[in-house]
Length: 150
Image 1 (tube, rainbow, N blue to C red):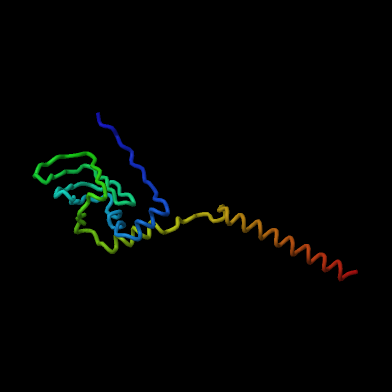
Image 2 (cartoon, rainbow, N blue to C red; image 1 turned 180 degrees about the vertical axis):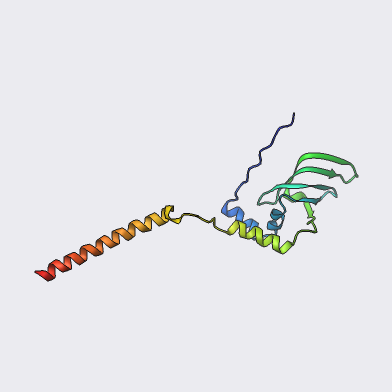
């Protein structure tokens, strides 16, 4: 029996975004989906694919191998590492650190593009105000014309 786990993307809150962007946590975030090694404080290490990293730098790994400090090896489908237990995160050689950090930061801070701006609430609000202003100006012009014709 293999249970299929549905992975959903969790969007960080504004506070979490700030925490990610203002620390080196954004580098670990950019490694999501990559296979890497994480050394733990008790001299053990875990090698696996990073499936999720939160703002506190707690890490979920999948399909990983745990190498204990006594050189015992265990295989896990999923493995959770609390941030305070992490000593070192090995960055794969094929990753350009600066580019990965910049891409991740821009993906968190970039506003989503809207294809049809005419349907935005703000655009509709401004159009309504614009119509009201035009009506007021037309009424004022009519009043001026009526007062000048008298």
